[in-house]
Image 1: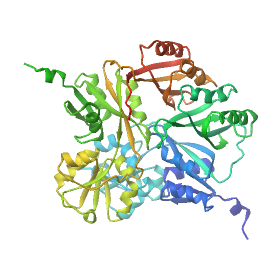
Image 2 (image 1 turned 180 degrees about the vertical axis):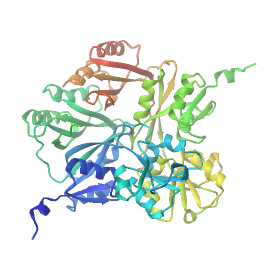
Image 3 (image 1 turned 90 degrees about the vertical axis):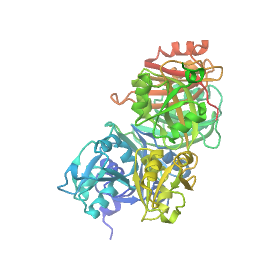
Image 4 (image 1 turned 45 degrees about the horizontal axis):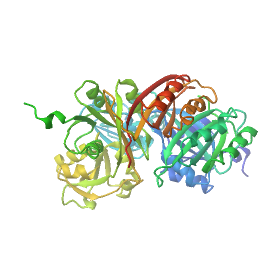
Length: 282
Length: 282
């Protein structure tokens, strides 16, 4: 017999190994009581949710240093999934070694290429005799390091990854730009009740005529709907047309939002509402 | 005596080693007759131009797969430089080896962490016995590979980098997402004549009130000025305020552009015109 506890336990997919930043976002957002499912790629996270293996997926969509992760917006458009939440996570990279290792012993640092890129200045300061090696996960690099059992190898990952694998933090906050925040979106098969403090994410495209975006935005401005994100992106196959990502305050189902979206359709060549969801206040 | 030719030769800074994608952008844009100055970091490119060691700098500002490079927008705001041009470059990553090397011999692939990240799927397909190592430049990885003289090591960089160092292209177009275009901006100490087909880049911030961006955009829409890029970015130290990057068609000095910018100042808490420059048509 399945107990109430198990019935309420959700399965949540993320990209990476246990201890990944995406997994931290899940725990910060939902607490520790759920079953997390590590996936090798972002595509696999989307498939897991689409194929009903998982209830939700956590995917990074923008970073305060690196910008929007267009790849995950593409996957959102390719999959019949909706956005049901968001989470802002502060990223703090640590240099992690076998317990007892000192900084001067290290000759090789392994991590995800993006983490290596974000710590470029720190890694250069370690000297020419220290080499960086790319592996395809931050937390996974700690696991590999533990398996190697070699005091000259260190990894870059979260403090949580060090704890999970019983490894030691040698240096903290080693990223070149300390103000590093990643925004995650939560994907699911069905929409959620977004509550009173909600946001909605949409994607649309317009004809390339002057003032077209202004007309599109008027549908929000005239109804006092506040935008929290706007970004244009050239369409790959149509070099002079653009698609736009907009997030705004409010939810589908509210009269003024529904009217705004109906009005917006008069201007768009394509429109998809990715979802309405509770706003995450940092 | 300095000849006319030398007098007209410009010194142009870029980040990376000879053969870097940034250097390719310089040659595509200006031809081969100029002196290119490799710099270790983006900060160094800005300093070179600010300190009059170079006339121009070429910096990547956005990529079709990875999004905007916020770091270089930050450097644009920190330095008293102007944007005097733009260039769109198609990025095509190659796997490069010692001449005569076959794909099956390779056990280690070295490149910039961003290039390794962009070729993740290809690298995984090479099998578990192949390791990736991060070095801080794509073209530099070809130089290092040549110095090692080891047939089991390959690099990821441009075909041009292979040619410069006399190395062989083993596989072409190995990036996971083939439609990979990087937009460069050209930075200088003084503005240029932008001509009839011009674009202007600006950065500004607004009070966080609903409809404020719409009012700001009205200054362009009401004058039929076409926007080619718009992006919002949260301000680091003021979490509920945003700055906006906008590019539009037209140049400072045109009456309607000057009027629009004067009008825009009524709404902004901060406004900087980064520059007007000839539009690059791909």
